[in-house]
Image (tube, rainbow, N blue to C red):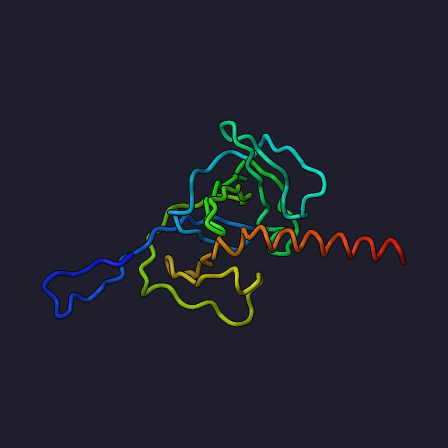
Length: 178
């Protein structure tokens, strides 16, 4: 968010801290911009749907709306985390192709809402990440530790998910023919 500081030469734009919801997936700490978060709910009430990509664990009924639920660990190519009493579904809202999209994401535990100043955000490294580089918006410094800031629109891209699902189906057919 930019703010104009009055009385400065040329009215210079100043970057204000942005709030992020931090959460754990395994040993890693991730963050999503708070403006994308609608709510956090207890894990449960999941209905599995046949023929969905593996990263989609099913759907939930959220006040009468059908909301798909994605397992972020599976989306990042890891194994699904076991469900514990701290497992949550974070309801996220994004805009894709000028259309509002609401998706739940399964996380191991929610930590806190943190303010991260733009000066404390570094670009994502070009190597060494355990997830796809286009899923990472940057690396935020929080309490002397790095937090992976997610580019949530890319992570939740339904186009990518359907392509992944089709590739997995094609691979499965190929294996069964061999």
